[in-house]
Length: 217
Image 1: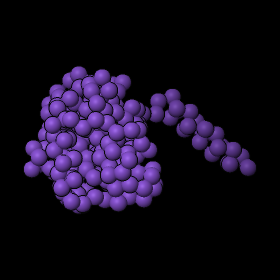
Image 2: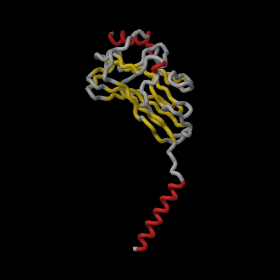
Image 3: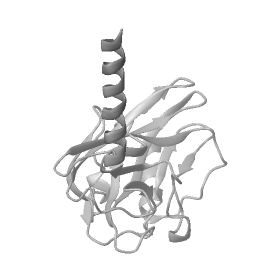
């Protein structure tokens, strides 16, 4: 019953943010990654508990650069299911990002381990929430931002990872002004940097000198 009340409040957007906590959301992979056109890239999203707590549910929005990536599939971690009974369902929205104009969004990616259950997490634990697979379509296209991020798109629903303890709600963003929730913690895919021809010539020249020196001995 308590879970149902929390979810109902979530839907109507009336739940105020709880005090700052040590719990947080993170993704793997992060930072600059090399990739080739046609590669399938899997991004895993985790909840982390710095202090012991119980994970109740989550509702986040995942933005991505659709000039470089195609959304392929979304898989929830074992034990989680979408809260479709409360009107929440993950939806791909072209050009739906609030963080970056022209970028796309997978809105209301949400999961609940059950209306009367939570997931107990000890201090330092990580819990996989969901995984998203993207296909690289144009690795030569690059921009100054990341290619995958978490944001709050302003669709009338509170976004965040919800805990049973004093941490209450760990927001990942509360408005379009605070849309880029993970800062520079997302993934950025780019083509491998080619080795300049001069470097190849230098390398082959050095190998030649080594060969000559061995013969002279």
